[in-house]
Length: 453
Length: 142
Image (cartoon, rainbow over all chains, first blue to last red):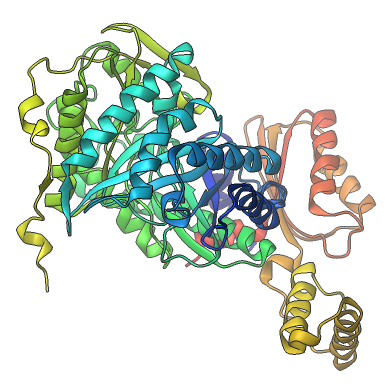
């Protein structure tokens, strides 16, 4: 027998019991050649280009799924940040672009399309200002389009003007989508040090240095890691790190295999594999449960940040050994609404925004899918975004904020989206004012560590 | 020798590139056909990736009862699959079996075979999984 019984059973157990799946296979498509003076022609070019490359995306992914018996939860598309490809448009026209992206996504059968984005960490072009203005309207009038804006980087510092504009955009989006628990905000993320090859929504876009078209993928697998930790029993932390590494190695190898197969079927290059542990609202597919299995009573207990740091690091080490194309965010995600364990901890008051903020300094993303009271002032949202950016800028890492100021809701209420976006209790935000600080505007200069040359 | 869709596509793209501006659908077709004939004549093995080796791992488990192996192997025989290796374990009433099979000679593809096996699994009241060998090779062999 070329494989041991245990090996085969381990794989079957991962895929059938422990929810191991490929979280997303995302096709990145450049739209840089789609601009035309006539907006109608621009739209037509965008639509036909996406259809040209992605028409078989779902079909091929499904074939590979069947071949290897590993499910691919999501098939998605990322395009060039539209502010870069279509800088000459105004806000109304950007909304039109969002609508055509939405239609293209629907017609090829993907659930999300990323790239309604701008990179404004140092300053704005006129087009980028228009795009940010268009975001709330674009998200309110489309289903599948997701938007991200990078407002800070270690090299450029924090563009507080952009932070303020984004706080405004987040509030407006919440208002325009109030009929559906402000769902627009679940599709809008503000970044610091955004990776250009991230396959996960809402932050996915096809970076300007990327090839014409590429396949990136994100693995999942908190359930697999959870089970490995539980099986390990009472071992010391060094041994535990080893177990996490080995497990991640295996799931990353499987992920890379699948990504390369899908890319080969399309005849396009394979880009990166993002080794983030991404939870889903399914029971047992939770990062919070992994942290609890490591030994803390609940997320929010003292030691949570240390446990998360160790988990994140072990995941990276295992993943790096397994693939030479690691990229994207690559760490552990700690969204609140998308993780049953996090939801429970938030309900019990075990985690607060402040503790989550501390955790984001050691994990791969940031304050993610957190519902806050609808009457939170813009300046407070801007302050939270600025805090996250500061963590990212100083530690030279990606951070983000995907906040949902749930329109008309207060602490203790819920936003409930069902599906992958899940459900979240509205959490308390500090009532102290940040108005005068963020109101100064301008840019927080790049830190010492930006001068690495 | 049959070429995979992928390889045909590659040959076609190469032909288009070579022909440059002269490429017409008819011309491309001729060049591709010629290239394929030449490849077939030379008998040079196409660069088949291991995924096309046709080796599939079948795993089955459930409560033990007579006729499970018979049921599975009968279906495999009817589909024209070749069993390369087989191994089984029984732990009290629970049985586990794995097989390495070659589906290269089968008229059915992996997907159809999975469907057939799902029916067999329902009849026998056990679980049957068919997965391409590569997934095990990638996960458990460095």
